[in-house]
Image (cartoon, rainbow, N blue to C red):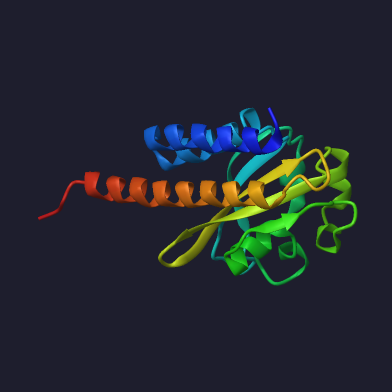
Length: 182
């Protein structure tokens, strides 16, 4: 299957699975599994923006070959060294961020050694958004340079929109399921 076909198959699978997710946690986990299992990415994770002084990114789901990378990466969404990579920028700016060459991308300097040691030649961060702004990202890693062309980016942007809408729907359903107090 060619790359565009594989990515389209991933989106089609995600549409079915996302509609069946019973919780936000399940939604996040199945999204990462689909990115790796169907999309063919070597690793995928979802991080949420924490509104603390460090502007930390909380990892809530992951799949694929990670081997301790996220525990040591210290990724933030602050406007400092820890927030310069694709994930931090996607959280701050609310738009897709692509790193198509980990070896050469200056914004990857802080994570280059760890990423290359795990075979992460390229990465993409897709923002998750709601009415109040960006609340998280889906970040995926590929083993080949220039893995994220325009069609693939567009399909992954659609995936981000699907996941964002599902999070909003599931959170609304959870609030409605709470007993009402007199």
